[in-house]
Image (cartoon, rainbow, N blue to C red; front, side):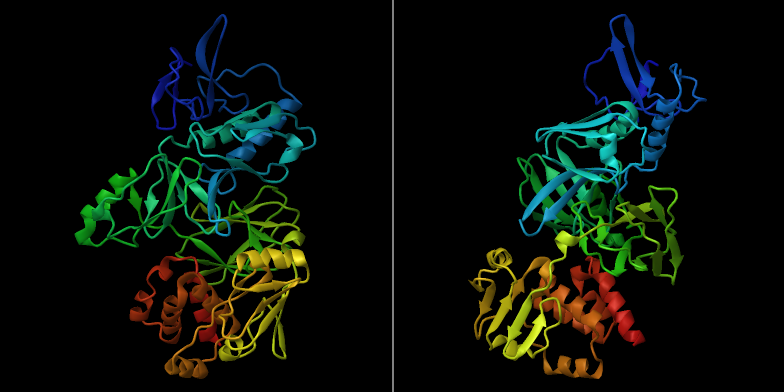
Length: 515
């Protein structure tokens, strides 16, 4: 065929080739299947369907000769890649923020695929960080490929049965623009936002830009905007859209849409993992458990059908609705296979069960006077006793002690033990070993409220997270909301309402109400 359609919907000719458009992401204008440009000696330049990926009834499809095992394997992987939507969490570009290192990292996620023992071929990712080849046997688990922001970003080529997957990954890589790129700003693993995707109200994003961006003053009143760390030669920014616009702000909404070059839409339904929490979250946002939980409870922000997908068709995850806001999952697959959970067709979370031995160190032992407890546990002594007493933390090994001491300069290290003296604020961040937070003194009124309504472990855990992320003022607002969940106290939460902690705050409140 002489014409193909690019990712923007424009028709592009096979000849003459001017190199003005990307060769990736081209589709047939008749059936929508992927095509590629072919040319050579004695051959007129034209676009051709990828073998075994075209629709047989397309009038512009001319299948090549040859069938057998090879064509069967290619059809299998073609069907597999068809399961991954363009906006999938299982494949594509992700930008995550490493809080400990205060830096950003860009990744390409290659999904796991089930090809069978007879599959052949090679997948090659070429970037400024080198050449990374993957054989068919290497892709039974998901892979993360580090990338450096640049334009073009990287190339992906494939052979044999991996050719359809290479085409799919090429489409993802070619979406990265040379000027501005937007990612979701999740706690980890923010997915790339394609140019035709609208931005959602009440959602936080990260923006990568080649040059400095100045936010127009008129937009500063509506957008929570701040500049972040550079990644290579690119500038980064964090921005959060407001929850809604009133009728008097319609012009402001138009200006924001023009500033980003995107449409603005209402927030889509979202899912939040409530219980049990994952052991850790990977750089691409995958929730990892050391063993399959019997049940996982999810909370949804709005009504919508929840579904779960596993690469292996032989494994099914049971999804059931407990209430309007609650959904539970049973039968999470073991063996490292990804389980993708969606609401209203939008992928929200990816689960995986794998060995977490390297991420499961024993908790550190804390000693204050005659009281001994694990750093993961709630502090069993009064705040004043902790503040004005000597505290020691036994780390088990000098290597662990050195690692934690580097992150906590106010603590003194002696061998495998960390010390904090009398009158010094006892605050210790030890990663997956646990943490000791600042003491927060409460008013007598709050003490009376806490005595009349006992605080359960879930609420204490939530309050610790709030104190760490939003400080003492945020904690006071949350405690007021726990004591009296009226609209006035809800609005005082401010940014906490749109944070990832809000579902847990509501879950703790609901649990306390039932108790």
